[in-house]
Amino acid sequence: MKLSKRTTSSLVAVAAAASLLAGCSSAEGGTEASADYPTEDITVVVPYDAGGASDLAARTLAAEMEETLGVSVIVENRTGGAGSVGLASLADAEPDGYTLGYMPVETVMLGHQGYDIDPKAYDYLGQIVSVPATIAVPADSPYETLQDLIDAATENPDTLTVSNSGAGSIWHAATTALNEATGAALKPVPFDGGAPAVSAAVGGQVDAVIAGVSETAQAHKDGQIRVLAVLADEPTDALPDVETANDLGIDVSIGGWGLLGAPAGLPQEVIEVLDAAVEEAVASDSYVEVITKAGNIPDWRSAADTQGFVAGESARFAEILAD
Image: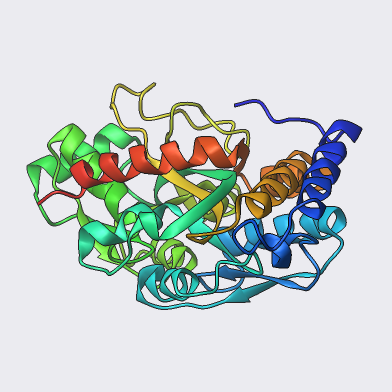
């Protein structure tokens, strides 16, 4: 997906949307309140702790959106329940454009795992990032290659442990996908986030870890762990010496993504303003630099296209997570 560049035309798009709002009246379904949107600070809910990949993407995006929208965009971390606490609070917020949220891939996963999270409870304002998965082992691990690890897990089922960022998380699902693709029986071990999952591998508490590239790349460079493969369609510049699982003959491609969303029911005029602002932010040099340096991929998708993308991802994970 090719990012648009920061240009005068995208600013014109925001201005045009604002002009359209100004022409609306309260007789048209109560759009008067959104006619001058935004006129006050905007909150972006992140359903995970500060300091992680989701938080980084949300805060970097918020800083860029402030320039376009002319109001403060404040990130608020609401954690718990594998992300369900923050997502539920977003769904319950007023659909006025002043409470938005970072929507991780778990948005389409949690409902298939017993959580009361429905992807249809949100309006989606655009994709902002993709997060490739990686699988790594401790630096002194006897498993030199991904195939070594798979072979051992096939011969000794449910004995080789793989840490992840939590039960129900995308990295837990990645372990399941790897097992299904290879016939191995790696045993997932949940931790409270990607950072402690990687730390467990660094300390030799587990045989391997599956986490995002931004969480494993530095430890790999420092010689604390050894990344065996990137579980994505393409290799990543953050790990130039590491091949994809597909290149190694193992058909697995799975990873995280992040969207900007809101409670369902936003006025269309507000969606148009935010859609343009998200595109502008994700295309900015500073956003691209920060996200790329972390090892993730700045990845924009329009609000309209994101609706269909979410529906497709929900169906895909229903199959992956089926008992």
